[in-house]
Length: 381
Ligand code: TRH
Image 1 (cartoon, rainbow, N blue to C red):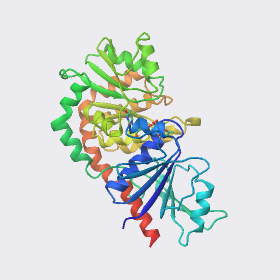
Image 2: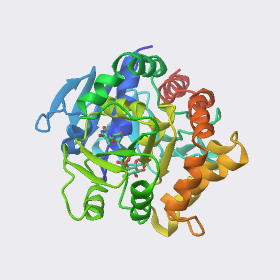
Image 3: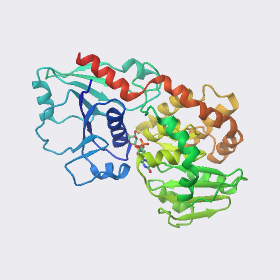
Image 4: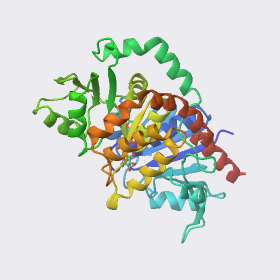
């Protein structure tokens, strides 16, 4: 069934909201054959993760998705059959009223943030009647288990990743200015928020036995890194060296090129939600920095994913992964970043083997776009 969808996305800060909304829109069109209109209030942020987006165009079609600017007051439009409100962004009042006027009201879904916490499965799919209008909003929770809304992933991701590693990875790295990797060298991508553990980690990398090449896309961690290198700039193309560590500034690329960076690295530091999931699908080791929340609420999210992620690892490697993630997130009682790195590094082989097998386990949760389509179709009948 080719259903018409409206997805609403309000960009709060960073790139996670638009990152998830755009990935979902693309997957609904390409993988599920749906018709999608995507309403976004900040095309400049959108343009960062997908440079083909024209930040001045009120309407444009990319990758088969009809992209519209969400302006106030909102345009008078006929609502779609399925309406996705990304992350409780609050639909325009006029649009809500138009939804309520339809003979058969749209399926209205609030897409929630991803979490590995166990309560997610209990809340997934719950309905909530609107207090005034004859409309029901459903809460749709992405997650890591079959009882949740699953994870965003394209059905052909593993095939594309393997083909890239076989045919294109060498040229990709050369284009980044990298010399062929020396034996024992680490290639590490670093996408992070400001982080108190950074100086300790840089010291450990600079003073370690193995050479580390750290690739840093433009973003919030860059000023702190620059301070760690005596104020030398780290804009795209800049390179700084200290001991065994080389740091290279990279441009912020589109989502697909960022995937290739994750695939090409030995270890990826990621943040928020979308890059965290992409790093897991990359089948490479990762260190996750959860989006910081008031009263350290993000530590519960961190522990929930960590518990799932290390469950199948041997106890020593599990401790090493947990120590590194906790150090990177400032969890009270965590080891210092340099010590955590030493323990992590000693378990490299086991952690790599685990990361390689991990996407096979993730697949059990199901694919977000397909689960959304199934959920909506069941309610449209
Ligand atoms: O940008 P983020 O920190 O987003 C965050 C979180 O999602 C958080 O939960 C949310 O509440 C907050 O924003 C407002 O991290 P995230 O989720 O990894 O999103 C980054 C996106 O940017 C992701 O889609 C990948 C993309 N990206 C690129 O397209 N190119 C790049 O070069 C890089 C580094 C990232």
